[in-house]
Amino acid sequence: MKKGFTLIELLAVIVILSVVAIVVIPKIQEVLFDSQDNAYNLLVTRIENKANDYLIDKDLANQVITGIPLDIYLSDLIEEGYLETKELVDPREEKKHIQPTESYVRFSLEEGNLNYKAYLVIR
Image (tube, rainbow, N blue to C red; front, side, top):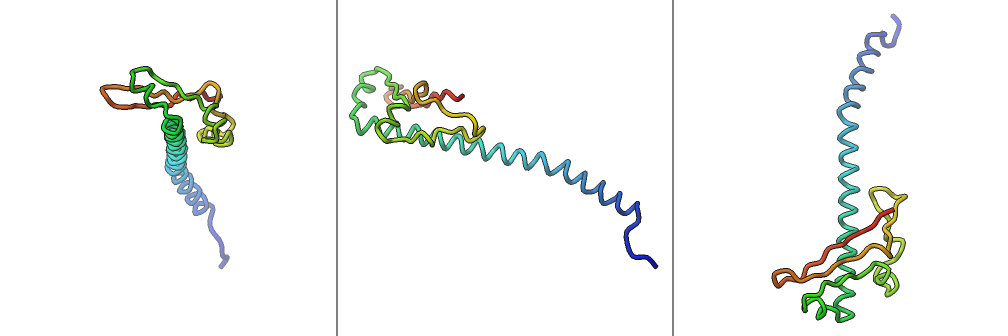
């Protein structure tokens, strides 16, 4: 008796593997996209926190408290050593970079609370 698999057995395995691949590959892509989005959100949070540190260190909060919004550009954060240029890579698409001269964090006073939000230009 010959050892080995029949053609039908091999085809059955190929079909099963194909079905598994069809189900698993989209899930893997979803996990990858989610992790890239999470990395981007962490980067934005880091930039906002560094801008907040800059605001406190430079004693600029008084300007915001008077009701005048304040924009802190990423180029200023880099110049003052709060950020490094190499940190400004978009984790969702590594060939794209956050433009420090066009991107900023805006601080404003809303309903008595100091709010800040990053506005990033990516190219």
